[in-house]
Image 1 (tube, rainbow, N blue to C red):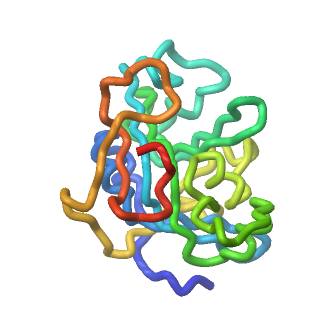
Image 2: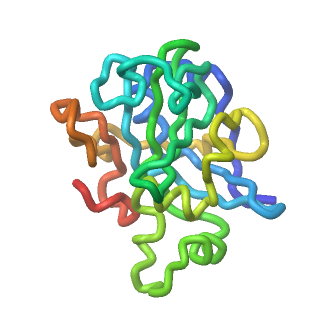
Length: 201
């Protein structure tokens, strides 16, 4: 049982505007059930992807790969990239929209030693490199393609509101990382001064 307390986010939260959800997810707590226990981390960095966004997987319509993006908000969209990494996204808005929020970084709260093993991190002096990127998050939480389509209102992977929120002054925003299109959109949101945020600032 986790020591982190709070209320689980319900479906209605995920049905809201994608940019709003991307900002509101900062400070929320991500739970991942693993071998009977939970790996837990605070979300400190996100990126928003809308249906009319040329950087989005949904921009050219529904495919077998991105089908989950078009589901009702509140499901997990996991994709494989660069032939070696997984990235996880929270599907947002109404069914058929094709919107999602990428989880870019988390601050570990529970299950740190397990995350270190899953990441095969040898140098613990570089602990802030553990989960400071979307592929690192998935590796540390053992999130793979098999988790694509998981209901975030279920018990395997879910998000909790612990009551912590950030003021506008505490939230940074920038261009998104690792994209070629939509560079003008400042749809990357992160907690300022968090050492767990990815390096691309």
